[in-house]
Length: 258
Image (cartoon, rainbow, N blue to C red; front, top):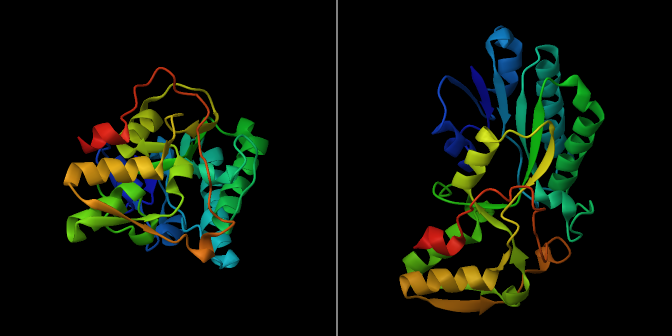
């Protein structure tokens, strides 16, 4: 059996489509699961994708309950029963300092807490891999709302109105966008040892580039709008994954849209 947390989320559903014999956990049943489940010896992988992922969430107790307390309890079972783990970390731990930890919000802090704990306890696991996901996009983002990728949000806007809204200065905001299909393939099938890895293409592109690709595909226009004040100081200017997957051919945003 495989335990998959966050099974009903965007990334979780993409994992689920590639797996069999899955125990699906989400916010509705994940705590109850610990009280009732008795077959840990039959689990051969924990795929931990569930979390409060909003970067503007300010309830630190809520963040800690779901992103830290739950994760550590799950990992203690993994250690006890020697179950391999693959879990979602986040590139947000870097903030605006590539290669240096500088989390800008409670979500990023919670992810870094887990990464530190895993590093300190890595020898206790039979095998564990953490993946610092960069900016993930792809099919199935319909229910993510404001947390959806720019690829999804821009496409939705332009299909509905013929135009998309782009923050002013977006030619200077660069992101390492990774297609969810590539992410799933690498997480499930890589042969690396235990550790925490960046998971992105290592080839960032600007929001302006993404907007132009979508506008060109759908023959729409781009509206430049003021940068939101509530994101000032909490918005990454640039993200770029370390080159840890040089043997993998990533799909580009332009290829995804073609």
